[in-house]
Image (cartoon, rainbow, N blue to C red; front, side, top):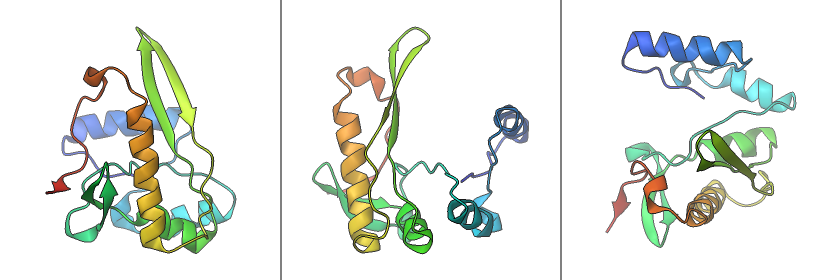
Length: 145
């Protein structure tokens, strides 16, 4: 899923580079029909779930505090039967990365809210693997205190 960037030159560059790599980007403002079809056909999509979802999110736990979280991954999984898989990329040094793929969550099991909470648990466990606090370069969720 894709949200157009504010700077059109950077946006065009990102779309061009990702397109060369074979990545198809779905603009969230154009609806979800193409993404749903891709998932039903056995494809995969990437969604950055660690973003503050504002009034459209579900308030579910994240590191013991409530965070507004997009229910989109859970909604798409429930609608299509797709599994939910967490992917984290860690820097292991200059030009060296480690990719961790989590075991799949059953997209049909549980409610949208419980699946969204499980996604937050998964993200929290992936963040907890990072030993260098400087590896987290920007805040993700805004938490309720």
